[in-house]
Image (cartoon, rainbow, N blue to C red):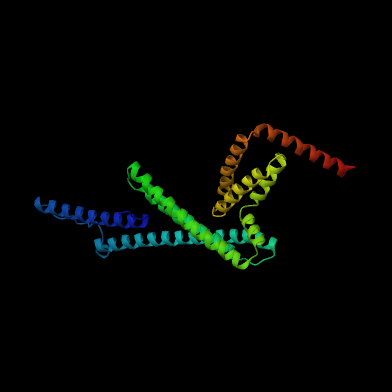
Length: 271
């Protein structure tokens, strides 16, 4: 059984008090056996006897325990309030761009965060147990599957909600807004870098980027959203390399063209 720091304090306090009582009784018995007179000066005044000490120590422990509980509750509320502020501001950028109402975006971010926090708690509990590697791996796998299932269900419900209140074009823009427009920006970059792409190759690239966007929508942080797209960009690059493109060379040539365009634009503005 696990104990909080406040509970540990109470247990130690009680043990200390009981040990103190035991020591006093032992000393009294020793003196009586040796026929020695009891000490004229008591260890504690009568008005501050053993039970008074015990009560004081227990009250101190309770105060310590509840102070910690309230402090943790306050921290949790502050974190929740701060997160709510962040997602509200993030959602405002999306809806203001589209000129629409919230459409449940703040609520979606909040529910995603709830699932993420629940998953973290489960993982921490698994790691705190003395499990064999095999059992730990199995428990972690089940936890990951549970989280994936929850995210998939939440994602489908959210998309259905968007289609109920927005046009298809607006839904696309909400998806892009929730993923920092990485999908259209990356697709445009591939088209600019590789102007000789076939229609089939373009469709393949765009399809993978849209798939990445659906997954990235369910990630809570910018870092994790970019990581999802990074994984799919690796898949795209492997596909293009297999099709005969030298991606390193193509990238270098593309950077040269970008710099030339920037220099030309700067020259035109200055003239």
